[in-house]
Each structure stands twice: as structure tokens, then as C-alpha cells.
Length: 115
Image (tube, helix red, strand yellow):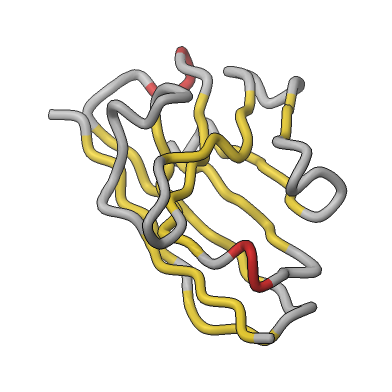
């Protein structure tokens, strides 16, 4: 079955960096756009970034543009999110997903940014 497993979250100070990873299995990874979405405490899911099947096209939410970078490895069925210049408002549970609404997503990895 489809599996998405995120890792790499943690506690970091404002201005710091983290790299999230997502290991996938159970589907033909290279045929799907992949997404990162997040859920802040008490809020709904928010789309963060998406990447095309081959990795050439990348899009970001305005709130993270210029600070986050999405990438993928189609050989190893992995997707990544490099997060730099982190802000307290980036604190959330981060999910990799197979669609922008997070309908098919992993269990998430917690990112906490302290001020």
C-alpha cells in the first residue's frame, strides 16, 4: 500500500535550518507530483510546496518563498524540504503528500521554531 514516512523535524531557534525527508513506497513515485503541507496548532492544513514529476518545476507558498527548497530523488523515491531562515510562524506538523490537499500523506514530522 501507499506509504509516506517523514523525518527530520525538531526544535530549532529562529533563523535556523532543518531538512525534512520523506521516504515513499507502494506507488510509482516518478509519475506523481509531490507536495509538502503543514498544520500549525489549531489550524487547518496549509499547502507549502510542490514539485513536478521530474523535479524541474517547483512552486512555493508566498509565506515560505525564498526560504524553503523542495527537491526529489526519483531513484530512491524520496522527497525533501530544505528549510532555512526559519521563523516561529513556521512551527507546525509537516507532512509530505501525494496531493495538495494532503489527502494521501504520512504521519508527519514536528517542526518547532523558538523565538
